[in-house]
Length: 218
Image (cartoon, rainbow, N blue to C red):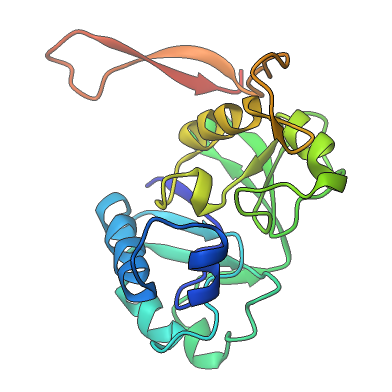
């Protein structure tokens, strides 16, 4: 079983497709791609934490989309999740505004989940996974958001429109934050260090004898 993170898909939301310059010709194409990408990576044994804003005013009801998605789904409620009703809740294993987990892929590291990026959260070395800001950081928050390596944006725009596991989430955030300084591109800014420690793991294929870099919280 693996844990995935996925924020702000905004299924059915035509305006967000345009505002965030998503690479889809229509909202129908966007929804189809998000569903296809999800099911290519997630199995029914996996758990996906949806960090809010799952659906907004779409022609296809949210419950119909939930039925198509593999895995166990836990919703961290966002500001656009008024769609959630008793029928839709049957397709979720849980829901919350703020939730605490331990991701086995991170060696027992604590992770806090909230739709909104918090300024502070419990735990000396814990991580905060959030959504809400998509791929842009408003000027008044940009310094904090782009300089805090333990604050991880699970928004689909910076994670390839797919649910991601912790290692890829960290890598995508480090790459994205490295380009930002007060909301502007700055190739000369100091490089952020990963909040996780590097460790070498065997490749998925034992035959080729190769190694690949993974992350661990040791």
